[in-house]
Structures are given as C-alpha cells and as structure tokens.
Length: 408
Image (cartoon, rainbow, N blue to C red; front, side, top):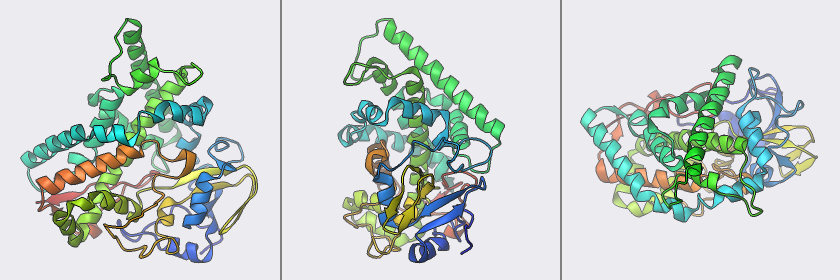
C-alpha cells in the first residue's frame, strides 16, 4: 500500500470487495487515505473500530462542516456538510430523532407491508407485460421505494424523476460540478419549501386530523416534549433527507439483493424451498454486499481516541467503512461466505448508535416484502447476463447497479 492511497478503492468485479480491505484489516486497520478532493482522512476497516467510531460521542457528525475537516469532493460541500445536514444539526439530533422515531417503528412499518406487497405486485405485472428480458432496476428496484416514501410523505409520485436527479447530485463524488451541486441543493430546498407551504395552508384552513395523514403534515401539527414545533428549515431538511434515504439507499439494496441471490443459483433455490429464511436472508445480503454501504460514514474527531486498531487524533476526519467491517474475519465466521440462515447478524450497514439509520425498519420491510413477492410470482427468475457483466454506478457516494437484466 502507498502512504495514503486514493479512496474509495475500485473493486475487481461488481459483486466482489476491493482487495485493499483485507490487506488493511490485517496490516493497517487505521489508515491514512486520500479523498477525491485531495484531502487526507483516516479510514477504518475493522468491525470493532468502525462500531466504536460510530457510537463514541467523541467522534460525531458535528464538525464536518468546519474548515479543518476533510472534504470529500473539491467541487463543493458534500452531503455530510450540506445546508440540509446543518439544518438537521440545528434541530438537535436527539430532539429530531424523538420527533420522527415514533413514526418509524418496526410495528408501524410492518403495518405498511400489505400495501408494499401490493405495489410490488403491480410493478411485477407491468414487468411481465413488458416481457423478458427486463431491467429489474428500472422496473422494480427504483420505483418501489419511490412509491412507498412518496406515499408516506405525501409527495406526488409524478415528481420521482426530479428526486432521482437531486439525490444523485447530493451524493456526488466526481460526477457533478460545483454549479450543478449548488443548483440541486437550491432547487430541492425550494421544491420542499413549496410542498410544506401547501400542507401548512391545508392545516390552517381547518383540515381535520386523521390517522391517514402523511408524515410531513403530522410533523407540521406536532411538537416536541416541550411544545416546540420543528422549525421551517428543519421541516424542509427532514423532507429532503427522508426522500433521499427513503428511495436511493433502498433501491440500491433491492438491486444488489437480487444480483447476489441470482449470481449463485443455489441461494435462490434455497429460498424457494424455505421462505422462512427471508428475514435472515435479507440481513445476510445486506452484510455481504461489498458496496451496499457505499463510501462509508464520516465522523469528525473532537478529542484523541484510542481505537482497538490504533489512535485517531483530534481534528481528524474519519471514514467508517461499514462494508469492510461487515467482512471482518475476526467478527464473522465465514465472513466471505453468504449464509442465508446466519444469526445473530449484527452488521453495520445501517450504522450503529444514536446516528444509526432512522429508516432501517422501513428498508427491512421493503426488502423482505419484495423478496417474498418475487419468490412467489417469479420462481424461475434468473440473471439475463453473466454476473461479471453487471456495472455499478461510478462517481457517487453510493454505488448501486446501473441495471440488472433478468429473465424468467
């Protein structure tokens, strides 16, 4: 390895982890790397180090917008230091999570499952009508979570192409210019401001509160334990964050889940024989995928910390590679094998601690639902190309599949 190799690393194949991960875990688990901006950061690749960095308050998101924090891209602020992130920080992280957390419980998300399955069935109907081969990304993996999150937030489904463009720009590494990123941040904020204004006008006009109200309207009506409502900037940033995370990440997970299950036909056949494995299979695919967590999560080090793998110093920017941690040979028996019945499975794909992904119950429900539907509807589903021919999206913080050609 060079003194500070370029990060992120290029995998040898779309479904294979970069060779650098294993080398760093064994030889240099707390390593200096060079980000696309040219700035230096500290990369963590072992499970114990990543988990501690994600949960220790001495390393946090606060500080990532500071002048001494490493920038991911030279063109403009990354999503971690964007106006959206700043607005959410201003709300107070614990307060913000309390206001939203009650709407994202596993129980509430499971109650949505019949509607999610019905939507997946309609998309499968359209795919069958289109005929084979078909691209599972455009036919199912992308539209399903868009429909779900739009329905939850009360956002017009017809605007989904706008969200795709904005989310890609927000997740930029090397694909978009400073001007394009600034325009996307401005336009997305303006769109969300207008939508919230419309909902506020409806509430002010005397609309009666019901159990069927969308989440943005519920947040407009709501308040924290001290009776304080969420600020206007906080509402806008919340809508942006939920739309981004609610469709982009889950769409990527759906595509890669079917790619991994179909790339080794024995995995798909096992699930056909025993559908009680759906829940554990979803967790294992999330753990196993080398790109599901994308770039990783950033943390700013506020004071010196001795991690199990080595020290990090105050002022450092740390990149937590959850995907590498999920392949740590010291944390997992058969780390490089996909065990569809693996339990327990404390993977870090959704983060850990107080900043773990708020929407993970929704993502899990969608993944379990869509897998159940396709096993039922298309038991002969198979890849229409060799797994080696699949391509990941380049130049973004996340690396979903460009397309997933399937047949049946």
